[in-house]
Length: 132
Image (tube, rainbow, N blue to C red):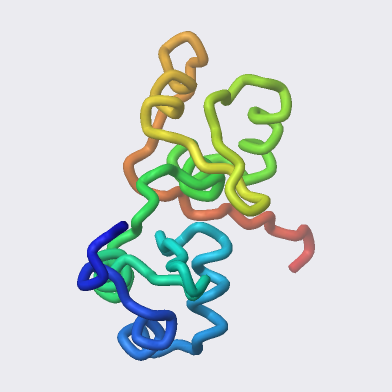
């Protein structure tokens, strides 16, 4: 059994983060806050995960579709097409969204694909309408 001092109750975690108990339960359900259930079936949240979340540290280092699109300078829809066609593989589905490890992304952008990676997000270009 885990050390009780390393865990917080849902209410304690909510107070630390300044959110509702319901929001903490949602974070637990979606896997964004690690937890375990005691014999009395009440969830306990890992104290360090709560403190990291409060400090703004992302517990999931994997890349989102949006982050990959920004790095490639393409739209999110284009990245979803890469996934659907099997060009971008190795992703994990987390609550209806894709997450990719850096290694998966690096394998995708190998010189074979001829894709140049940008360090900074690309500003969206807007089309200029004729006559305006």
